[in-house]
Image (cartoon, rainbow, N blue to C red; front, side, top):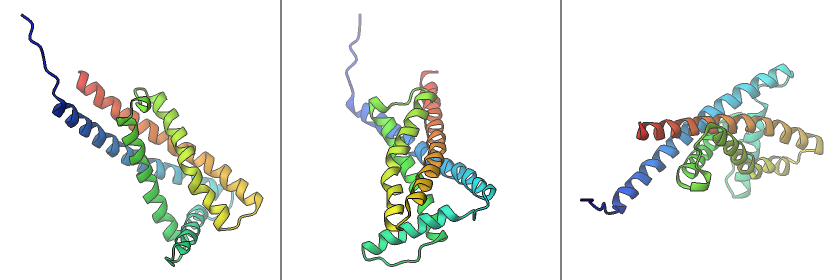
Amino acid sequence: MRKVLQHDSRMEGQMSKVALTRGMVLGLIGGLVGTIVMDIVCVGALLVMGLPAVVSFSTIGDTAAGFFSMIGLNMAGGVPLGTAMHYLIGPVLGIIFGAAVSQVDVFRVDTTKKGVVFGILYTQVSSQPILAAAPILLKMTASETLQWFGVSFVMHLIWGVVLGVVVSYGLGLATAAKQG
């Protein structure tokens, strides 16, 4: 005799919360690790080119200070604010990515390759408004703007790859643990 199992939406809701939490934690980790890896590469490249290692942090800080002054908050820009903003934005964007890929079926990262592709696409799209603020607020020349976007594209490519690998690997291990 077959027993009919009834659908329990409470269990499904609980599993969804667990998946969301796992995705957000993995996104936080991936965003932080991606930020660190990106900064190591960036600082190394800047030093090789003979530029100050902190020029990107200074640009980010000056841009943030310019933005904050537009909304009536005056603060000093430079390296400290740039570093703080950089290490706040990276993990927060990672959390959003982790939440999306753990909850939205079309964004599910069931392979590392898909995680990397989605990580790169997400990064390049989500970073554009933030990146566009620097040339506008700092009144960069066309040459400076091109250099800013070129370097930022490569650095965010690195961040997206790391984010995608961490999140897809972590979610993959979670899936494998459930099946095994």
